Length: 443
Image (cartoon, rainbow, N blue to C red; front, side, top):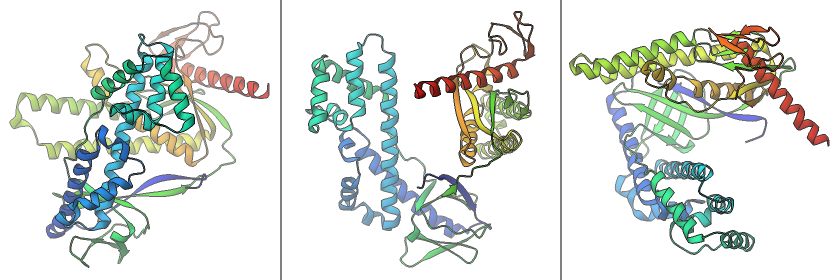
């Protein structure tokens, strides 16, 4: 993909309800793809399959020879995509496992620096990692082998290899395909025509026609999500979007992120004032439904109604977030955005209401959408270390006091909203850090 483009997912929907017969055919394809994925997960998701994951053609050949495709009667356009989708899931699972092991290594105070260096090397070099987990001798190219032997000579290699195996056993989970929710399609499996899409089925030369709500046509791999009971589908299409550069985007903006108000800038401009209201409504509704379900199952409205309303409330929040992000970028026209690097969410003692609110806070979605929109507009995001930014005075740097969402400094007499003071500190620290890095480059 060219550097001046980014990937964006667009959605397409069916215009009319799909007949039960056609939905049954699509559901059969989805179920067969689920079986293929589950087969790949079971046979290649463990340590024995590590050596075959890259580039994956060994697994493709073994799956071809297994006879599973002929047994299911699944067209190759669906079979091999399901295989490689499963391989992608397995690779992602191993990436998460390695990251979790690395985190434990970094936080283990009983390990020496040499032992940590050796463990990081094993996690970084795939062939060494695979050999250690499978109790085989590590054999690498000459340069890597020389480095491995040097690092292994400084530590108890057997002890460290056992440590890696133990951590992987406790952290690596097994994948399983439990629900047939959809399937991927290549260009050969579909055709846009007649204001809709023709989808290949398990019957030779037989395609299902689905009218769509738009006339857009794409020529790439897509994913079709099925809603079998409703008779609806959702098509997800990854497209390349050109990155735009706006001449008027020149300012630097510091942001304070909150649960009740989405963003407050260093100038005091507020965006997303209703986020807390919408978030509280969703949180309170989920708590009420949970309590009602526990108290009396007969009074429970049912999971279908519950899921439908929860989806509507979430979609309203997401729509509001996107609207406010667009307004923020259009109004502020920033070239650089400074934002605090927030810690992970944590429980708030025994206050269940606050715990629910913190758990359901759309922080991850807000950051993801902000990054997407900033990338499309060539706006740079700089994360700033957030320790003490809300209690330090943005004018003189002294430690001030916070009371009722206000900040006051006894040293210089500065008073303002806590969010504005935080946003100014974020911008100040970010610009100072960038100036320091620029000075080092010049030197």
